[in-house]
Image 1 (spheres, rainbow over the protein chains, first blue to last red):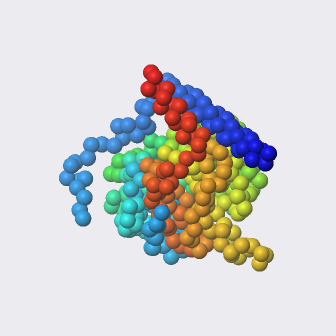
Image 2: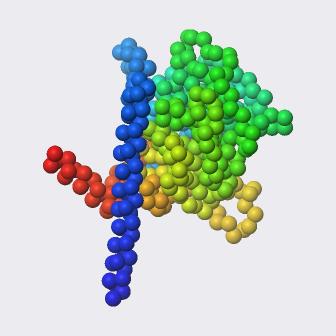
Image 3: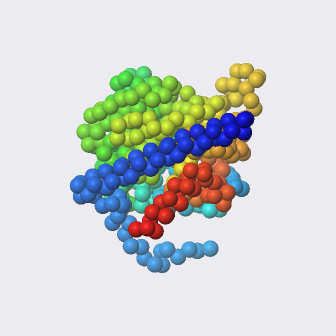
Amino acid sequence: EDADRYASADLAVVEHRRRLLDEWMAWRASVEEEVEEEREARGLPQDPIEGLIKKTDESEDQVIE
Amino acid sequence: MRPVLLQGHERALTQIRYNRDGDIIFSTAKDQHICAWYAHNGERLGTYHGHQGALWTVDVDPTSTLLASGAADNTVRLWDIRTGKCLKVWDFNTAVKRVEFTEDGSQLLAVTEQRMGFLGTIVVFDINLDVDGPQSDERSMTITCEESKATVAGWSYLSKYIIAGHEDGSISQYDAKTGEQLDNVQVHEGLITDLQWAPDRTYFITASKDKTAKLVNARDLEVMKTYVTDTPLNSASITPKKDFVILGGGQAAMDVTTTSARQGKFEARFYHKIFEDEIGRVKGHFGPLNTVAVDPQGKGYASGSEDGYVRVHQFDKGYFDFTYEVERQAKAAAAAQQQQQ
């Protein structure tokens, strides 16, 4: 009987976590879509630093040990 | 998770920031100079000298070209990261407690302290990312905090809002173009000590002296998650790649009045971002953690303490493998769905 009770308590915890995870993923999906649309509407690049980093000279990138 | 100890500061750490690539760490302390370190081995890359007072804050622009710092000498300084040259000094009436660049590095905000005769403010400067180019003398905007001074502030996604955390535990949302206050919500019961962003800046985490950290939606200031601890918090950071948050704090020895207070509590605490459970602690410091920062690439984190040290940790396999059953199931379900398509 005890084992049954623990099992159902565990199940409740797992179900609760599943709900939290579902809610979180749903919120992320909606906010990501919304921000992407807003970026586009404002004419901003998807990556905010796109075009900011100039091509560096190969020799400058050389690592000196 | 064997840490690398960064030795170079002589006083309490105040802020740590990684650059966008996660290979360089910048740190400030009350000892008047900024340090730059290689994240992978802890070797010191350089120091930036010029401030005449305790340093409170540092930030690096997204291209790792410029460094901004704020200090008790009432100045904000802009530095050429590569050469260490100070490019600009802006003077204020009071100390500067926080600086932050926008996501494209085109603007910088600074939070100034409140003092007799001066209200706390948030000021904005336009930034020229060319180290050889001129920087503007004048601020482009000033927000005055009439109600409660701001202790921390930052720029939201699209640099649409400026979000500030206040001494009274409230959070404000300002229009980043006009400075108009759009909203103010009471989120904490004590002073807000830190505010750090999720990678896309649509939400952030706050740390407070009220012993909690909160995850807040930048658009409507809704509190989405609360992390409850047993110690005043100084810092909180969100990990990319894994759904964790890292909290740092601890009671300073001089503030511990009862002998029953457990020695230490100077641990970095890991909580699950979505489930709000504490999942682990990392010991090591001998004083309260004043600042924690996570590598934007998700490979490690660094903590800075009242004890004067920075400890850099690389995440190990156990960290990346740690998942809840429901997370594994959700991942498997998503993979199965993708296969069907």
